Amino acid sequence: MFFEHALWVLLAFFVILYGNGEYDLITVVLTDTRIWRIEGIQKSKVDKATMKWAEPAGAATLTAAIISFIIALWPIFGFMSLVMTVILCIGGVMCLAFLPTVGFLKMKTPEGYKEEGLSEKKND
Image 1 (tube, rainbow, N blue to C red):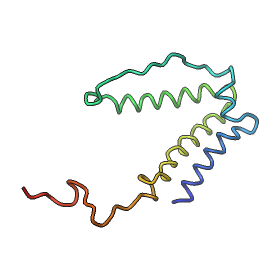
Image 2: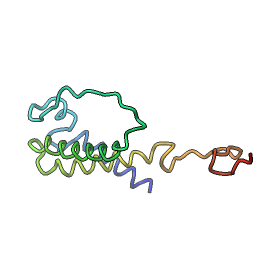
Image 3: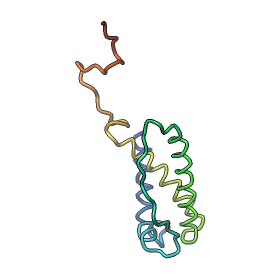
Image 4: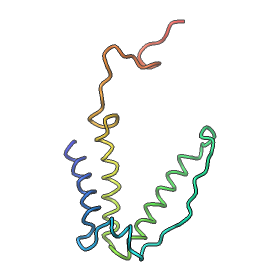
């Protein structure tokens, strides 16, 4: 399991650093004029308790971002932009396995520590 996660993360770093062998992804994203950029994205303040639509909107935004990323890189990398995007997405998800609170490195709780509401019911 560890080696699979490490492999995907290394592949993602390889794609970022070497691209398709001719262009690296960092230089292309920052300097290439063939990529269309959207300017003027603004942040807004919204009450988080009333955002029932946040998860579907986040999923739709992520999907649109991935498709836009592929379209933006298509003139430079062609079909490799699909492969590179898949590797970057899977590598990004596999990076979570290396966080101490998520993956196989998950920290153990001390013996005397009881999580509130999960281990025992409180008697009133």
